[in-house]
Image (cartoon, rainbow, N blue to C red):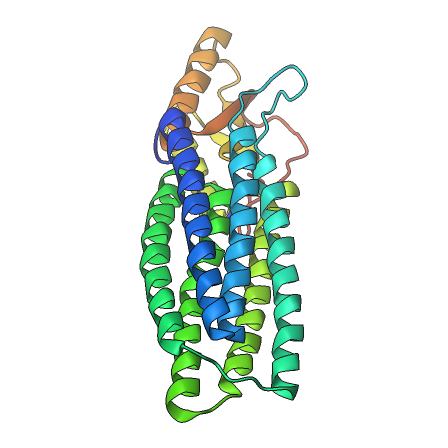
Length: 314
């Protein structure tokens, strides 16, 4: 998830969807662990072992997600006035660590099998299990994609990324088993295991970068910041804006800005204008916390956080 993705539904429904997504991922991972374990015992395939290990880590990561999402959705309290949203990127970093660990294990196991090849038995069982895994994982990723679209959850995005990787992994295992059983190419099994390990590392790096962006309070993407600026500038009594600052913390966005209005405008009207702008922004970003400061137009201040290519600091 980029930092610019945000919920498009009410926070209460977003919370329900996020919790349901975590329960679904844990359930699918636990079921696949059972069937893949049985298939690996029957086949002794290293590529199938790689898929089993990936499912074990999926289950651990999904359990971490379940706890993290529940914590991230906890309302702000006296000690955490900005909420608990950063539990999500912390969970995503934990997932990246889990995934990297699995890749390292697979590299060693595949290297051992390249040096000391072993036959793969009962490849038909392995293929059947992988087909079942593909069906279940595809259904899960479609549901996760729907939840991410509606909520913008980084934790669910990270979960979805490695389950999408699972689809490729499961397909690769099927190809490896076919090459071994039909063509007798024993090296295909460990070689596919190495390829899977490389993909797992790539996924881990992607997840970690997204999590660090959120933990470091990276600004929302330029298109989202311009959307905010366009909404603000659309009010007839707003003459300009500056010091637009944005960040994401789990499912919540934080938007801060200074409105510039006629310096002779009565305070009561200026307050009403700011309330109107806040209401429009809240409609566009339903999961945002919005803070607006009112300034007389033309006041000399040090402006920060300019949009790239703009002549005004926004």
